[in-house]
View 1 (tube, rainbow over the protein chains, first blue to last red):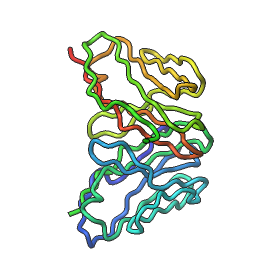
View 2: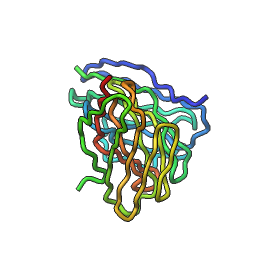
View 3: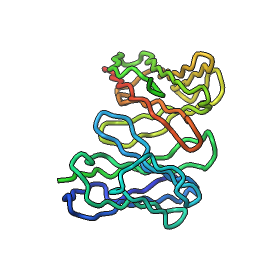
Length: 113
Length: 110
């Protein structure tokens, strides 16, 4: 299995809603990542988990809350988002050592209304 | 100065030609470099990685790295219309931190 699976593929939510994005990989990768990508922009790093522990938070607003229940799963909990948070949210995983490329999931297209 | 810089394009080449994509980076501590291909509305797909100075070939793709000049390039031989996409250059600027350039849009015309 060489895939990173993200669900849902599309999500529309109101500014008062609470929702979660899910990511799963079975490649034995011990590092997992959340990236945000706006249209015609490169992916921007949000969070890094290494061995199920949060190792990097790129000063992301607290309305985004990551969670890593186990080495195969990564969640991103969303609460009180703003319309400008609408974007493609990408999950990725990699071997946890320098120099390894990331495998990306297909992403969740999020629209906040 | 951005950490990873690319010309946004579009770079237009005819089918069968060689497409040359370039990238510069600012952090001399970066040791690993990657090229991703991203089709519109899709997620990035890793196509090449390079760690050592020189060339690395994989099929129609050749990645080139020059650490002294802080320069990475990607050559696509025998370009096909299906190669039309945005190509993202990325560098490991720190442990576990992969930073992307803004991407170069490639258009291959039949």
